[in-house]
Length: 547
Image (cartoon, rainbow, N blue to C red; front, side, top):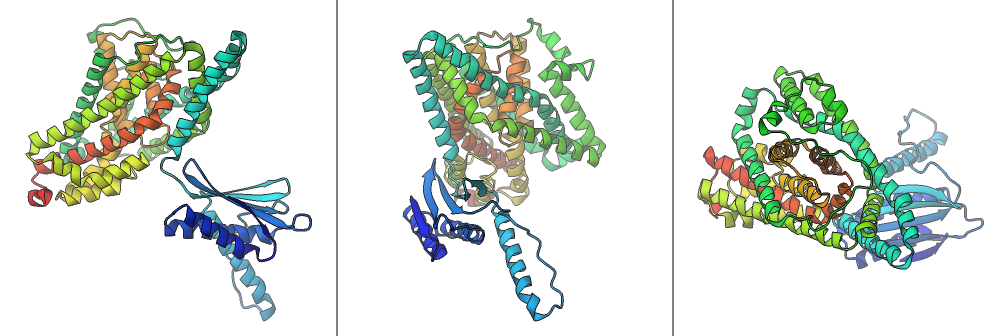
């Protein structure tokens, strides 16, 4: 709702209006209080620099956008340093005339500190004689999903409209000069970051595990079950792809030259070629399998050598290139729109049915993986999997609503405690599985990569399938839980399989939906792995588990 306020009694009236509007949206009391605090400090700063000589009012707008609660404050005035100076002045023994000045400086510094502490939620700009502040009072867990669905809808409608109401020369010109260039820029950015992110993230992950003896002492049993879960997850995905073959109903043609599949080689040659003869050549040619082998060897070597400075350097390099990836992730909405609209223009609506088939295959894979968790817990420990599901419900809800396994980590540890698992296990297993296991990722990587091969007519040999499966397991362990990391890993797998990177546009359009099922499945894998590992070491209270 948009409302104007006169400069007299401006602040109290505006704050009361904001509080009433947020209450009508049925927000929690703590969210309302935090939003009002941000608005109060922002308005104090804006009104201090206001100019009501021409315009004698300011505007407040409270609304919901994709589930997010947004508050806009627009006050007339000249541009100024909104965040101000956050340094608290030094108080010396001054006379009484200076005390008021020092008090004002202190209040300004405290106000600046408060505004800077909320800088994640507050954005300031000066536009047409108005100082404008946008405050994100509440961030919805589903805002990303709403945005993606809206972009998909607009892209499909735009593609259909262009193809239905305009001549072929017009819509193909729009496709070739707008949609394809935007998509190409995005793909080139991901290709640029793919090799360094994969290399440095694997080295960082493995070097942090320390020596082989230390690894065995701290979590050898956990690592064993993590690998088993990932192998089973990969096998489930390959089986589903063999049965349903999503993406095979259409034949898409890449609009640009991409990595082509190499000549078919024997399994023995594939195994021999795992280890490169030159450490530079795989990096230059983008041979992802050999790059991962180099990274594994270097990561284990750094960990065994115990050179902490090297681990820190590789960790910082990983962070740098992940931030570079985030720069290109800023144009994800444009990339999704361009990819889907171009797909509708060039291939028609039949492709959308194949995309739906990919999504349903992914969901089926996650369901089967959860069934495997239950069977593994029952067979290995004799404990009831229904109890595991019931006590894991708070974690599942958090994982489903946030689509973040890291956000569900505290709930996961509490669920383990409620099941009687010893802290000696879950204090290690839940964080380790969250960062390393990610048992649902092989399903995601496998189905996406093989669906791309089906859609673009890429044939993979038996040896190619085996090397792809090994790469998927390695990338599952090393892929960090950061925005854009999954897409980077998928781009590496597509390059290895010889599939066009254009498929990333389709994967991006699906990922927001499949994440609703992927994240809870990953978190359930953490719980199941913890239960089995704890039972093997007699570190679970069976009576508490059954209660």
